[in-house]
Structures are given as structure tokens and as C-alpha cells.
Length: 215
Image (cartoon, rainbow, N blue to C red; front, top):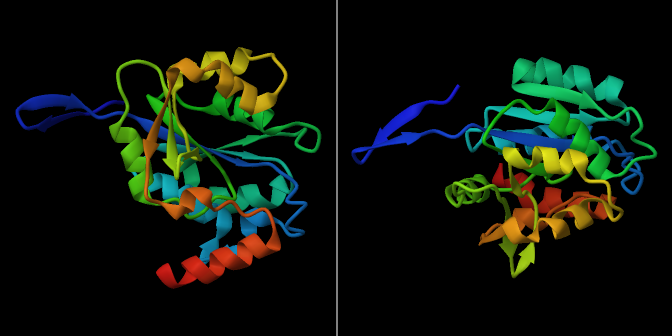
């Protein structure tokens, strides 16, 4: 359901924004189950999900896979129906794009959704809001940039879901975005969190050292 807001004499339509969090991977380089590692008084995956909700997102789809039976009850207990769980049963043999497709199939109808790996827990609310403010009437994918580099989370127009589901070329997600180059837009942000993805134990320790004190 969309809500109309009155602002400055103009009647504005509040957009329905959702999130898609990818948490199906093996966490092999971390040698621990990343989603449930502690950070800032909660789990890593909760930090990631909560960062999307901080900007007013309506729902977040989480794609699970590895140790799904352990993770899913925790998500259901914490978020109830605010989080939609979609499982990638073939997580060990498929790539990120496969998980994105699974998530897109579970995505409720909305205007756009943020796409964020589950191991990026410290993206600032201001980054999400900045991307939302730059949405226009035409379908687009809007990436934050830091020092000129495109980073996560892109804000993906829901009308692009059929393109994502029908993409059949090689090259995975990188090739998909390459084919959408004409509609990709970028927004510079001042947020070191868009660099922070936790692949290794050292990444995790560095993140804790930098962000635990900002709790």
C-alpha cells in the first residue's frame, strides 16, 4: 500500500522500498559462520538487516543457504513477517546471481530494493537515504560511490526484476550490470561502510575495532 504525503503544498507519493540481503554462502574464508558472528551487541546479519530498515524499508528478503536451519529460526524470532526468507538449496554450487534471482522471486511488489551482501554490516543510514533521494521516474540502478568506485548497496528498480530473472549470459552479476550500463547512475557518498565487507577474520577484527565503539 502506498501512502500520500503532503509537503510544501505538493502531494507526494511515499515509495515502497525493500531490501535483499544475501546470506547463503559458505563463509569459507572466515572459517566461521559469518551471519551469527557478534558485532555491536547483536549478530552480523542483524546489523546488515537493521541498516536497511533504518531508512524506512518495508520488508527485507534474506536468501539463506549454508546452515539455513540454524539461521532461519533466529531471523523469524527477531523480525517475524518483516523479513521474508528465501532459501538457496543449491548454495554450494551456485553463484551470487543465483541467490539474487531466488530473492527477486520472493520480493514483494515495491518501487525499488537495496541489494546488500549479508557481510556488509556497517553501511550508514545516510547512504541508503541518499540513494533513495536520487531515484527518478525511469527504471534505474543507483550505486553509491566512494573515491570514484562503485560499491554496495545498489538501489534496484523493481521493474528490472524481469531482466534479472531472464538474464542467461555468462559472467554472472558483473555481466548483468554491464548490460544495464545505460540505466546505471551513481551517487557519491561519505561512508566508509560501503567498503566494509567481512571476508576474512582480519576483516572482522578490523571492523570490530573500528565500529564497536560507535555503538
